[in-house]
Picture 1: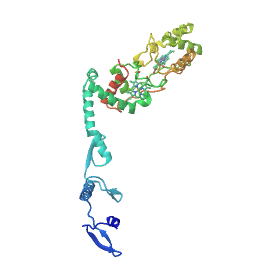
Picture 2: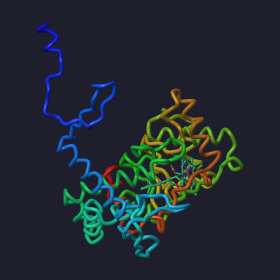
Picture 3: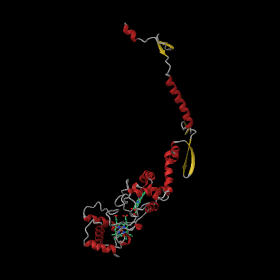
Picture 4: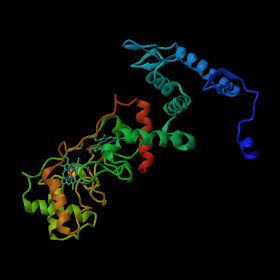
Length: 311
Ligand code: HEC
Ligand code: HEC
């Protein structure tokens, strides 16, 4: 008996709704907890304020626009638009804390000369951070993510070897105006034996192959009127920066895929291919003038100079 009493509902002070079913089945009327009610009211108030401020309800084919707006510059014009995710993002990108800091640094870099930038660790840190991002967006498709280039097509920018010069000014000029090296095809000028000889000579300059009789004949072609190679590559074959002709005495190859060749014969073939075909619009370094601001180009020139052991 005592068990049943404990299991039964104790009579409480809770009110009932006053309805009764099946004689004695009643419904309690428990009030909602106070904290819950207030939270609920707060969300209602929040929603109403939100509807008022932000775009919310669909109305026909349009929607309620809200009263907030965002201001940003587009196409050189300042525009104020009702708040939406696009206008808010544009405003944030242009006037947010990050954007303001960036603009300040950009202005500092624009005003400073190269020597000053190089000595200022803070400016350099900014150059490296912003430069990396710009590089990945605009340059890495050709020069590779790390700037290591692609043999046969795009020069390596992280070695300290420069076709067009590695001073800050040279690099700035390269990026601004683009570059397009030219070398004629020697298919019609030199026969196969002469191509073999001149390729042996080129490779002997960097010790890739042993100097021999063939390379001695090649030297005559290189330095004489038959090949005329010296006119562009220079008497010492070290390249002429104003022409973007390669230095042939280092072991750095941009076009001839010598690194992939394992035998002396394969190396000669790799060089012969380039001399035979020439360098005629195989690839171009685009001009960035007009596509990047002068300040961005300046920043990129500092970045590349840093990256590749500029001169
Ligand atoms: C469409 C491919 C392409 C893109 C994109 C490109 N480059 Fe180049 N870049 C080249 C080619 C090709 C050359 C070599 C041109 C030549 O020697 O004829 C070159 C050469 C250079 C050189 C000179 C290297 C040397 O040894 O003198 C620099 C510096 C350079 N690029 C920087 C950049 C930067 C910075 C960007 C991005 C803003 C960029 N490039 C984007 C293709 C590209
Ligand atoms: C009109 C100027 C010109 C003449 C003449 C010329 N070259 Fe070049 N040569 C260039 C340029 C520009 C390049 C491209 C450099 C680069 O992008 O790596 C080049 C590239 C090369 C390369 C590839 C270098 C590399 O790093 O992969 C070789 C090898 C070469 N030349 C050999 C010769 C030989 C041999 C002759 C003569 C038979 C010759 N060149 C004549 C301008 C010239």
